[in-house]
Image (tube, rainbow, N blue to C red; front, side, top):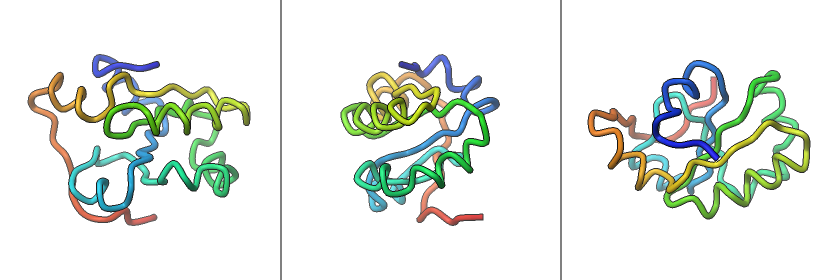
Length: 108
């Protein structure tokens, strides 16, 4: 599990995976987060492996439920994975000056 206090480390050292729906992601997300709805994790596990490139994966959703499911799948596939305690709801409350990006995910 990771917490709001771990955000600076996660930004510098991990792949941040936002597993909310595309609509939720578009309404506000961490600028460096990759959007992959939790229902697609198994289907795109090799893509996640390529994006992570050996880095840990830090997973988030709105409240922590969907990210927990995604984390379990990732852990079963050998990823160093952790879910954000309390999700975006907690993160936004804990980090008052948190700047969020809006709009759909744009792959590089």
